[in-house]
Image (cartoon, rainbow, N blue to C red; front, side):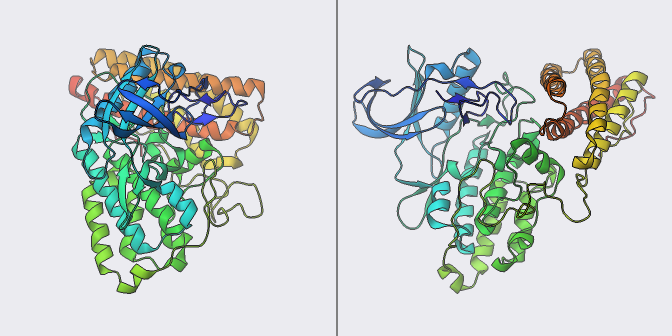
Length: 501
């Protein structure tokens, strides 16, 4: 029986118990396979088209008009709480409202009395971009990359204009319609979010959603994500189509998300200098992959227009360039067409020259002063721990790592309680959301402490601790910055000396 993460819907083997991305317990999901001729809603099942970890897709006949549709069916065992059902129904309604060119059309959706959830979509003929990677080989000709990229961004712009962000853009969710020229459809809005949603958040704060290879750094820290999140994913896809590999790679989801938050993405010219990619395209992709969402381009339309301009400037012979001959084997968190950087002869982690195992360009400043002695002292101590652990990287001795983990456990919980008391004092409306984030971080800390007691030399302990520190410090510094501003308004004379970088 497959085991599925309820947050990201990824399926894992029977021997797995935790999702490596979300650290949540996997749930056993009983397969359902409706018999041919069974009716779901007003749809008659004809044949199975595809099987996924959490759903099956069927060709079905819609009554009474006889139109054939693709029917996505999820078993009752996947929807054990009202929250989960509500998230499915909301995402289905968001997708139904979009429609139009570039986005798969959703006709209808619902839940049957036995708990089975279903969604009826237009039946497409063609293949996904992920299948094209496998069948055509990577890298793609630059002209094809530009044509497909512009279409994807046009569809993403339509999604954003509809007030949504997709949050799970990846080659498997981009469909290439059969025929020539290639036309694109975006699929699967299971993680979509309303940009202006002020209602209950159905995705809990501190929960990372998405597919690790294409997730943005901020998604890896459990932030909800906005327009820049989708643009980052498009940047990864463009990078992969051009070079044949994703910018960050690792067999571990935890280390992969850690890299995204601590290492700049390489430039196309560093990975595939033989491609001779136009400098304008290389610069544009690098801007999409910036770790800071504020430094990415402002919107999909601007990036789409730049791709079209670069396409128009290509020599005519570019259009006849042959496709790459390297095949792209599927892998859990990498899809290389050449040796993984830094892993050709060893399983040791990748370190660029001068790094010595350290995580570059990551330093949290303790300069923020809230005027609350205990809170300020804990903030400074947590900054020092994070800077030491992230600065040393895997060169940090295991005994010292355990000491730093103990130090975090001494300071973090009191710091959270003091933050929550301040949120009450300033009557901050976002308080419940941050309390939920505190709970998630506390659970992860408890998990790390439990892992230390069971096996202090566990190979994942260091990487999980460092990713936890990145998540923790980004949350603390954003929250403490907001609290400092609120206190400055309500208590004249308090110092606001700057938010840590």
